[in-house]
Amino acid sequence: MKTKISNAAPATKPRVNVITLGCSKNIHDSEVLMGQLRGNQMNVIHEAEKLNNDDIVVINTCGFIDNAKQESIDTILQYSQLKDEGKVGKVIVTGCLSERYKPELEAEITNVDSYFGTNDLQNLLGSIGADYKHELVGERLLTTPSHFSYFKIAEGCNRPCSFCAIPLMRGKHVSKPIDELVKEAKFLASNGTKELILIAQDLTYYGLDLYSKRNLADLLRNLSDVNGIEWIRLQYAYPSGFPMDILDVMNERENICNYLDMPLQHITDSMLGSMRRGINKEKTIDLVNKIRDKVPGIALRTTLICGYPGETEQDFQEMKDWVEETRFERLGCFTYSHEEKTHAHLLNDDVPEEVKQERVDAIMEIQQGISYEKNQQKVGQTYKVLIDKKDGDFFIGRTEFDSPEVDNEVLLDASTDYATPGSFVNVQIDRAEDFDLYGRRV
Image 1 (cartoon, one colour):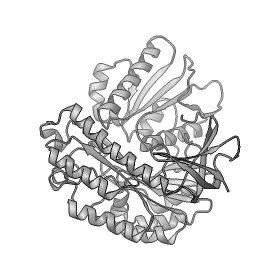
Image 2 (tube, rainbow, N blue to C red):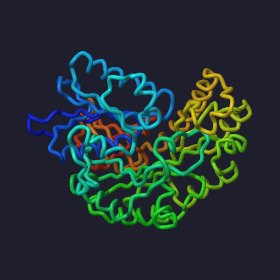
Image 3 (cartoon, one colour):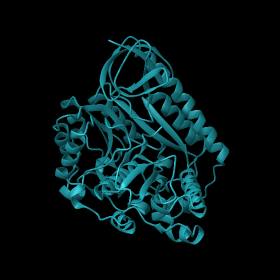
Image 4 (cartoon, one colour):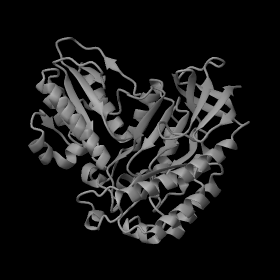
C-alpha cells in the first residue's frame, strides 16, 4: 500500500490530490509535481481516499501496454464521473497516456478540464494557479517511505526496440547533469533517504548526450560519496553497449548494491533481431557470464516477453531452456502487447493471447523453482536488511539483492523481534520459501 502524505496549506487554496499509475518513473514525476505544489503553498495529498467537492484531482497516467492503458482510462472515467456528481472540483490528466493519445482522449472524455503530456509540468502548474519554481529543482515530496527513493537520472530513450512505445511518450534520451543529481541526492539524504534506486529508460546510455561518453560510472562514484546514502541500486540497464566500468565501481564501493536489473526480453537470434535489440544470443550469454565473473554473487534481474509476433514453439523452447540454464536470481515475464505506431505493429500479432499467457506461466513456474532453490541456499546465512515496514505480525525488509515491490522480502516475527522501519538490521535466515525469507535479528 502506498504511503499517504499531506502538506497543510491555507484553507483558501484548493487541495490537490495526485493519483499515480504505472512505473517508478511516474512515481518520480508525481513527487516532483507535488514538490512544486508544496513550494507554491498548496495543500497536496497523494491518492486520498476521502475527497472534497473543491479538490483538484491530477491523474498521472501510464500508456505503456494494454492493461496499463485500460487502468488509466478507467481511472479517468471514475474521477470524471465524480466531477459530474459534484464530488470533486477539477480533473486534470497528465503522463504517458495523455502524451500519446491526447486528441482521442479530448474527443472521448470531454469533461476532463485539461490534458497535459509528459513534459508539460510548467503548463500543468499554471493551469491550477501555481508557478514553476526553478529553485526547487531536485526537491520532491516522496510517496515512498522516506528511507528509499526512485532516482531518475535521465528522461526518454534513443533505443529502436520494435515493441516499445516509450520514445513516443517520453521523447529522446536526455541525461541530467551530475552536479544536479548530486544536489538532489544530498537533499534526499538530508531528509532521511538511505537508498537511491537509479531509474531511466536506459541507465547505460547515461552521459552520451552531455559528456560524449557513457558516464554512469562517474555518476555512481559521485553519488556514492554523498553522506547518508547507504545503498545505490541500478535498474533498467540495456545489454547492447553495456559499460563494463560500472562493475568496477560496484566492486570498489560498498554502498553500491551487487544488483543489476537488465531486461533482456528474449534469447533467440530471430526474436532479438526482429525486436531490434542490437544484440544476439551469443553476445547476450557472454555478457551475463562476464557480469557474474566480474561481480561474484551479483543478483541479476531480467524481464522477458512471450508471444512476440512470429515467436514459434521452437523460439519459446529455446528461451525456456536458456532460463533454466542461466538461473537468474530475479525474473519477470510479460505477454506481448501490440502497440500502435511501433515498428512491431507492422507485424502480424499471430500468437493467440491464451498461448502468450501459457508461455508466461511456464517461464514463471521455472523461475519459481529456481528462486526456491536459491533461497534455500540462504538458510543459515546472515544478511544486512533494510526494514521497509511493519505489516500484520511481521516486520518486512529487503537485502541488497532485492528491489521494492518486485523482488523477495525478508520477514521478521514481530512478536520476538523489533525493528524500526527505515533502519538496517542484521538478520540470520532460518527458513525460506519461493520468494520470501524468514529470519531473526542477530
